[in-house]
Amino acid sequence: MTTANTLPALKSAAWVAGSFAAAGAGAFAYGSLIERNLFGIRTETVPVLPAGSKPLRVLHLSDIHYVPGQARKTRWLRSLADLEPDLVVNTGDNLSHLDAIPPLLESLKPLMRFPGVFVPGSNDYYAPVLKSPFTYFTSPSKLRKDPQKIPYGQMFSAFGNAGWLDLTNRNQSMVLGGLRLDFSGVDDPHLKRDRYAGFPAGSSSSGNARHLRIGVAHAPYQRVLDYFSDGGAKLILAGHTHGGQVCIPGYGALVSNCDLPTWRAKGLTDWEHNGRTVPLNVSAGIGTSRFAPVRFACRPEAVLLTLTPPAG
Image 1 (cartoon, rainbow, N blue to C red):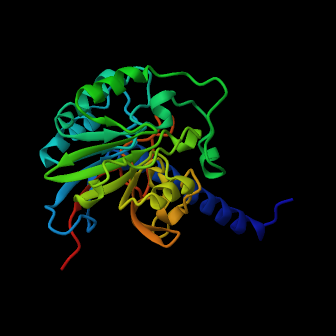
Image 2: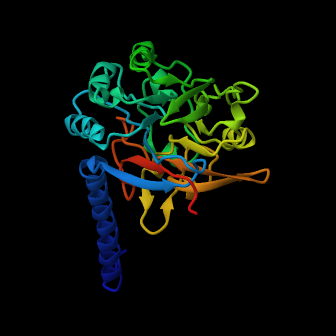
């Protein structure tokens, strides 16, 4: 039985519940309609080059999760060529639809005239699936037993034909501006497909030439970061986390979707292992799964890193 004294309390509780619901709906609308399309460029300066080297501009792309019809994303991706990077590093999860490869390649075409390297993520191999978004906040996502395969060979071939180096469980070298870049890359650690190949050995005297070792992975699992660190990497680039995708303002990411601490889910930090300290750049990514098209307090980004020699 409801008494006169309980009516104000019930009305107050209803008002509070309604306010939370309205705020939640507003946040979701903002995240799905506005913030996920607020593409930006994060800039970082990383003093890792050998003394006497010229600065090197590296454009780090990750987690594009392209879906046909994303006109705003297409225009922004094409505009990134205006940055004229010395090197493009693509850390995977380019796709979010079975039919996305042709329009994705058209979007990246202006950037593919620059030197580049790439590694795949799980959504380069398999299409995303519809599932409850709340599972993202309970444990790292897992691949379903019967995933729908994407014809990724077409994309990999196009990257290779443009001169981008495939670092899928491989090591490769390239020379830019008189500096030798030694890369080590792995297949997607989230799928446990990573097989560390070490860094290029080169000739007996190659260690005397100016060079830089860079580790490249899609998902920044700690075991992989340790591989690269032990191998002498001076820089590690990864994506996968989406920066947490839905973050709390003033706090940050709730999850990283791997075993990386959440405070490292995006940005430039130092990875420490066995007495070595290596700059680690984790991109917050450009897109989202087409089944969870929302970002909150975590804008999509590409990252432009300017590599320089140490000051002094």
